[in-house]
Length: 363
Image 1 (spheres, rainbow, N blue to C red):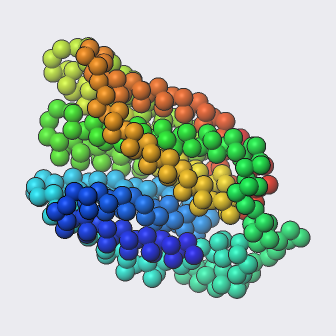
Image 2: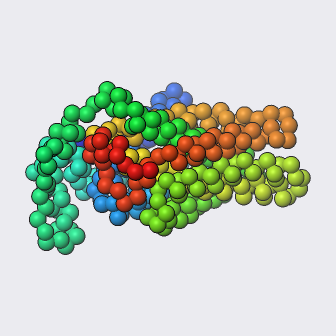
Image 3: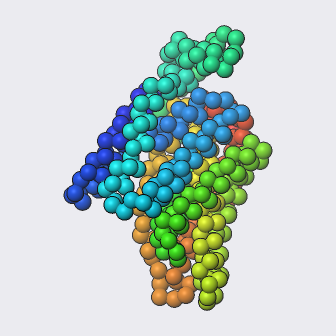
């Protein structure tokens, strides 16, 4: 089912993107863009990828999937150097999604999800296929204990989830962190137009800094852990915003270059944090709630994106007031980082199948 929903989402994404590119009506364009944002292929694609690999490679796969967002930024930014018509730019930007539809037939269903639904024979076939591709000779057999994992997964509902204070508190912290990461990320992205220099070049540079952050994150995640690297990344992103106060009080070229350097530093940190939270969140919640929780977090992130479009243009008639958005972003980032310290560490941990497994995760 997750694979099927992701397939439908990818088709919807492609169709609505093409519709937005070809329309001349503002209302149709806005509707198309909202439909694009409403598709579920991002969350479901990420979940499917994480559930297909073991703990050793989960961080590599998770960050690699998320890094494609920055690859898209580079792609669109470089296109914008040569394509000035917005409709043609939108059309060219949507082509990779159309091509991806044809690759979905090679993506298997989540074996973990199938097992959770009691479809063990289908799950075993998928795992056997993966084992053969990895040159493994062993036979795959799903073993059930006294408490069937399938039954445990089926018996859980949203009401049960809300009655579990530890997971409810964890969800609240995670939602706030998603909101904050999205607010800072989109706020800095929208602020690219306010930086000095060529807007296309600044846009491409921001994508390059994001990719650098992703590659560094992959290297450090398995060595240091999810929680520490996430908090460090959020700290770097927040300080990049807050320290913008310094260069704006200085006249001359140093002010221009200083603001740009700190903006890119902030983008580097917050992009790393955002990529980690995409990986970190599913690892903290049970299989039956994993997609739903990630979807709720993504919804909060979209709300933050809306708020960022207003905050990015919020300024006061004073020297420091001109960077008021960065001060707000940085303050919220520090608050989110402190709250994230209470979350459990999931590095090399088995994905929890039940609420009991999730609650017992160590901090």
